[in-house]
Length: 183
Image 1 (tube, rainbow, N blue to C red):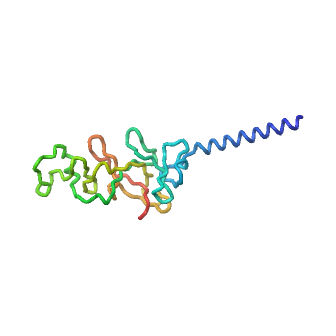
Image 2 (image 1 turned 180 degrees about the vertical axis):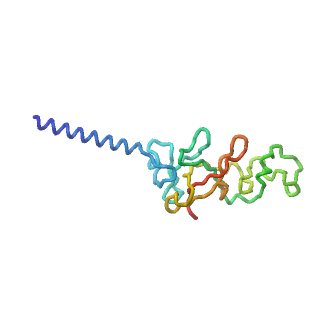
Image 3 (image 1 turned 60 degrees about the vertical axis):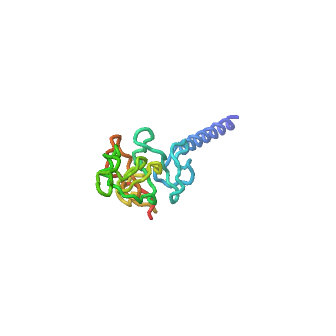
């Protein structure tokens, strides 16, 4: 009888260890920018999603902002605009002050005139783009291509329709670098 009780205790201890290991593995989440197939690959408890439109998937947080839905330390919230819609040029340094949209102002004659419509924004690259086309997502920070996983490279915000979220006063926060698929 003693032998059976000892065997059961060892079996229970082994089961307990297996459950602890399984629970700790279940609680782990991948970093922003890691490869994935399913949302649960990125974080089993939710909060992060797998963007399967990226090569080998890309763990991210969608709809991020600088206040409520912040990115973790390894990432930056980037706003993406479709480059196909970047057709009408503007001057970002002039558009910031264009809150009153002076009637009769001709942007071709006066660079201080607003080029963008009220529902548009003049992005860093110098194009008017509709705000409704914006997509926000956390992107993995980098300093060089070597910081990114295979098939990805390090890009700067302000290029390719990628923008940092502006500050409340409309000012800029500089430039961020993030990993995205190589062309």
